[in-house]
Length: 483
Image (cartoon, rainbow, N blue to C red; front, side, top):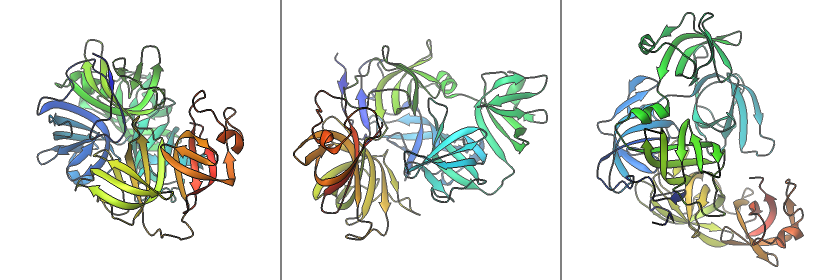
């Protein structure tokens, strides 16, 4: 059977579907299922495009029994339960959350290439945060500062950078936590490292599991303690199952995992995701639409082969955004869960955006998954081969006024060519001012506005561009993105 490329009805990201692997079409009602991913909403709990009922769920937060109220949008969790035949709903038997890092941050810096990003270090680990894609509690992107104590959840990319999806400012500066893989263990000196951070466990309380499996390099652990002279003096060391161990020991065959690709092999279409080996050879990869590579953010569904300890992918959703758009809401067709579509005014035209369970609604001091006509929004999205736009995150801009001084908008997408001074980007047409500012810091591709308008899109690499345009729809700035 030929592999297919389609966008599933609920998906809010580019979805690549294959027929290999077998058994993961979710056709059996209430089949066992394990998913790891970010929380995108509540009204039950939404993870990986599935709405899980939580009436009888066992919640575990930071290794303690908890309730759903302890969870927040952006947290990376593991859901153990069942999924229904529709592939959109399920029941969570257990939801587990543990932060990746907690401690005092240092070396805070703005990204020199992207004003929407910042970096800092914690235990020597580089952490990247985003103005829009990171969820914040008791702190904001603008108020981040060296010396703050932050709890961080996210995904490590192929370069070892923790891409934060959730940050919470803590009040207790004495307690530090780190999760990761043990390395450079010296049992005589009772020290080891995690991601380069030296840990002294000479006075630590060790998990009872270490009685049967002594501490060793390669183990996944969580450490609590205090930093003294750059060394983490551990008070507690707990053994944790890696994602791969969870999959291997689970009674389920069907799994969903989210993260950043590492060690991608283009010839075999194999890679690693959070330490899990993935075989994507049965999934069709349409040319020109987010081909896989290291550091691409994906969600993978598949069947776990315990013999080879490999996840055989049957569906891949590429979560890296290709489209960013600002606009005023013209019409809303969303249900109570925020699933459906809405229309935006973009450069004098109407653009329809789809929303699903995976879409994050970012509204200050509210968990509402709704929109109202007249509101201004910033949308982070992807577009499929048919031209449909699917929102990954919607930020509602409170207080923006039509015709105000801040009424300049941005649009990011794939350049589709020009006729005269009329250009098309991701199926939306714009008029370019003859005085428009053009910027391309790459060594390749068009270097001037004239060369950009004459660019041969059929025989040249695709261009991801960011436009600035005024409320009349006239483009005043064009920047070629280096991604």
